[in-house]
Length: 394
Ligand code: 5AD
Ligand code: SF4
Image (cartoon, rainbow, N blue to C red):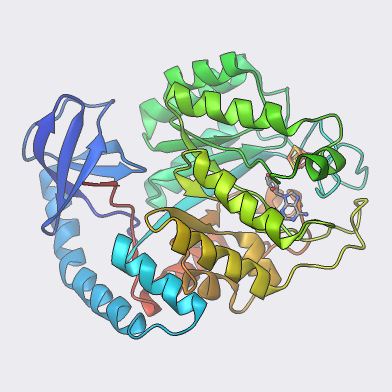
């Protein structure tokens, strides 16, 4: 199984390299390796994350070559003569970004949280939750499995805001991962001190997933007690200035959120220099104060994806598992056909996956990881998408 296409280094300008993928040239930032012309690498999110032996790369490229062009043809056919908003967005995606689709993994390593967001199933006051923390060894073991056996090149490490994982735990963890199995490591650990984030950057993490949840300050303060939108945005901006890639976004369907709020959410996400838009439907959880809120419709979510694609043609837009929860049969497919071009696969060990219940009945919760991956790869190939991340456009 492959989630990335190896690229050949054809130009080197300090730490920016130009990489060739079947004749298509992309730029990537190299911070971790000594590279020479002709070397083969994997890039993720615009970073060189792995250098690979030429023989291995050539074997993988041989398998990819024919398949890649077949997929492109299929994608072209499926985006022909767009009529509806969703189709126009999908054809915009193809025109600006081609058929590559990022496939990232996520490992949810702790469901403890010090906060009480009204919408969230693992909020501090929900006493129904059985809490867990994965040890450093368990996390590393799962990362090894994801990288070495399942071939992932980018992983999100996510938890509630759990201070048990302090600098003494997180810094060695990130260092060890980057030494052993280098990847694009994406942190999703909430509002922590900037000093901690700085140390984690030095240890090798290069991206942060931190949603601002809603651009409407009064809704924000209502649903995130004791928190202010400005603080969240300041942190996101600081992280970007520091060099982190930012994955951010919002919830769709919070009570009293208006259509204008959602348009503002899209614009705010764009203005935060986001590497990837990450927004999804709010799914009410029965053990939270918002349990009686109706779910948003698929149309609301797909329209938001399509509008985002039309406004930010070259952006990466994640199709979230929450969308799959809203429509188990067709959620991911519909998202990918409305402008989405990224997927995240849950790689949390089975025994913990059920316990990370931010919202109920998460898609894939009982399925074997390898089956979920195969299902997603089948979906991508049926839509003419190549499961890869080809780096920054030149
Ligand atoms: N439905 C959907 N998404 C949720 N999140 C929290 N609670 C819910 C819910 N009930 C999202 C938030 C948070 C991310 C980790 O999970 O946007 O940033
Ligand atoms: Fe904690 Fe995040 Fe849930 Fe809020 S949304 S309660 S910060 S895990």
